[in-house]
Image (tube, rainbow, N blue to C red; front, side, top):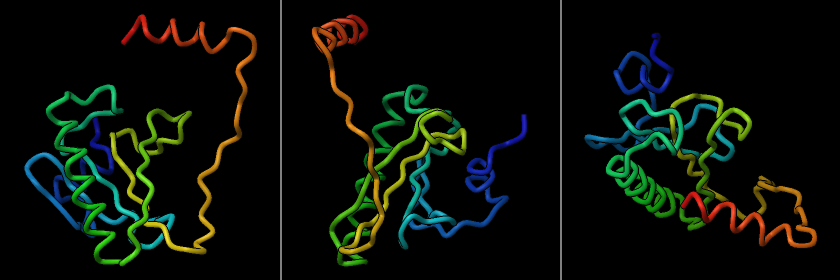
Length: 136
């Protein structure tokens, strides 16, 4: 199987503007940023989605995301950011290698992360709650 683009970055086959790296994760600037400073946090092992990542690697990923988010806030002086992880193509995941987006936000940046609100009807919320709880 051919390596995905993130695996090729991790293996040094494609250059990237790295901002952080440790033994389990790598972070680099997104080449098509939603805002300048938009970073990706990527586990070095290839996992497709959040559900595939073992807890030990997930802990490293989240810690790296926190470190990079803090560095972005300090370096850009904004303090605001969105933390996003798309899981699966339907959710907008374009690269099938798990990754977290950290998007710095600025007053007046006009970037909108918006969804339409749905409403539960009758006893629908309670039924869904019980259904989900069976699998937790």
